[in-house]
Length: 401
Image (cartoon, rainbow, N blue to C red; front, side):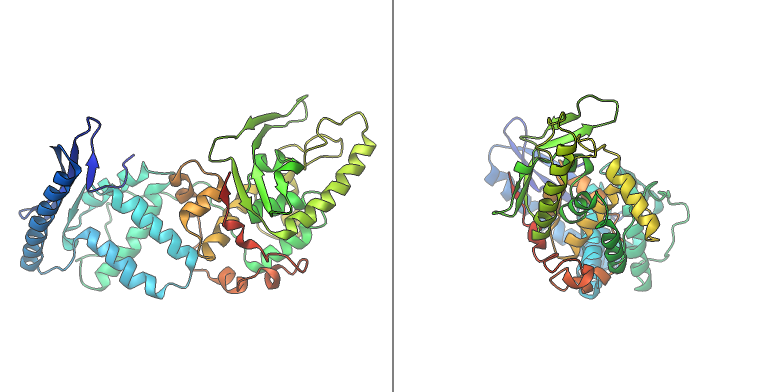
């Protein structure tokens, strides 16, 4: 997996080097090479600047002789900044395209070419490199490049709009389900009558996984600070196990503290009362009394319980079938529509790699600003469930534990 290029870098032996761009006028390509062995960063930076000056002169001459204003990489950047961004109506789609372009496509260019010299062989090599970056990276790069190259064709920068022999990257086997605001309201209306309502809220509005939810203790939620701390993960809780299996998250990216909405604590208060009745009915089972998610036998709920309840809810409400992971995707989607950056979303979701978050967010639907419009700084008019619902969606400003 390639990392994003840094023009000036320090090698393992302590010496310094830099990336250089050189023009090959015969085949209209721009090649990237490393120039290393400098004793100091300052000398590497000075050499880099000289190489850039030489490159700028060479590339301008080549563009002029070929009557084309862009290299391939330059047009990708131009398209995003000048053609697409000013007219985008969806923050989440803008978010998705930005990260596909700047984290998947551009860092994986082995070389550059003049825009009108793009070939199927060139694109195939690029897409193959993108595929290795994150799950379905080739597919998402393929989709975006089709959009951008169509734009280039419409503006007469490239001679053809299709590359029939280009390697095709199939759709991901699992695509997350995204609901409209009206569908989310129906989901929550139906879920509010079930014993898994709190679990569904934690997945949808806090981005927690099922294992993280089932691992929660009352002490992990601070009503005064409006925070939730994820400290453990329930990895296995099948009915035949005497004791659930937990993973300690301390010191990992998953061990995080998030700001969460008021309505979570309102539901937590109800859950405490329900759990108290369960414990009274099962006086011999007290080892899990500090945990939030208790089942009817005073044991922690099975890892399959929230998902099964969610499927039943969607069936009753005539909604598309959802998984708990789908709710995490919707949570990330809402955050993106609110203008949250990828690093903050990655922290909220507890991802250990940014590439995981990028793959996660590449599932976002294209150009749908319905949620953004309905949010209008508060989730109240969208979901109409309790007077305070959504007034503190600023849980996105989560802090590291």
